[in-house]
Length: 309
Image 1: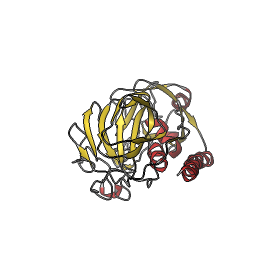
Image 2: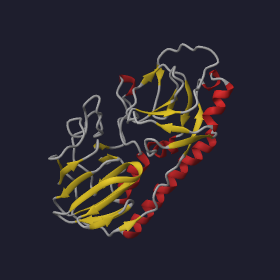
Image 3: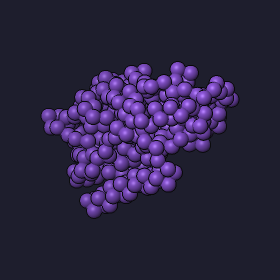
Image 4: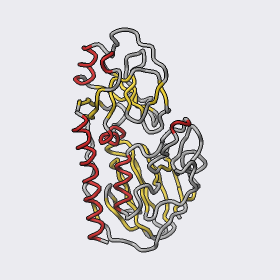
C-alpha cells in the first residue's frame, strides 16, 4: 500500500494504453514515454504493462506502507527518500513508513514511479490508464490527489539496489514525411526540417503545439476526417504544427506534414515547455533500426536484472 500525501502536478496512473478500440473513438492514452515506463518495470522484474504513476514536471509526496522496491524513470527528478537523495534509473529499497518526495523535474517532462509488482487497480476497457476526458481508468478517471491510497501487488522479496543507463533525452526528433507532405510549399518543407520549433505552454497529453515559421500549403486543401495517431504532425490553418500525443483523438481533418517515428515518441514527450527542438528526416529502414535499438536497450536491462536478482 502507498498513501499519497501531497500532489503538485497532474499525476495519473498509466500503463501502456488501450489497444484495438480506436475504431470506436476510444483514445489510446497510456504513458507519454512508453520506453521509460517499460524500462522501469523491467528493472523491477514487473511485466512491461504494469501501471505506474506518471508525474509531469511538478511534485508528488507519498508514503510506503510496506517494504518494497521502487524506481523512477523518464524525467530526472530532484527526489528524497526520507533524508536520502535518490536518483532516476536506480532500483531502491523502501521500508514501511518511509516517505518519497519527488520535488520537481530538473531535466525532462514526465517521470514514472514504478513499484515492485505494480499497482492493483480495476481495468477499464482492458487498461488501467487514466483517460481524463472520458473519466475512466486509474483512480476514478482523474488525477491523483492527497488522501488517495494505492494498493500494490508487492511480493515482499526485496531485491538489491542497482542502476541502469538512463534513456538519453534529445533535442532533435526524427520523423518521416506524411501523407500530405507534397501538398506543402517547398519552402515550408524546408522550414519544417531546417528551422527550430518552440513547444508552447498550451501543450498537453492530447497534443504538443509548436511555434515557428508558418507552414503553407501550395493551395487550399479540404479533407475528410481520417485516422490519426500518436506522432502525427497536423498543420491547422494557422500554419503552426500540432503533434498528436498519447491522449489524442482518433480522427482529424488537418493535413499532416510528418509523423514522428515510434522510437522517438518518448523523447518527444520529454521535451520541456518553452524548449526549442528540430526535426530530422529518416527513412523507413532507419526508423525500423532505431526502434530495434530501443528493444536492445530493454534487453540489456533484462540481462542486468537477471544477473543481480
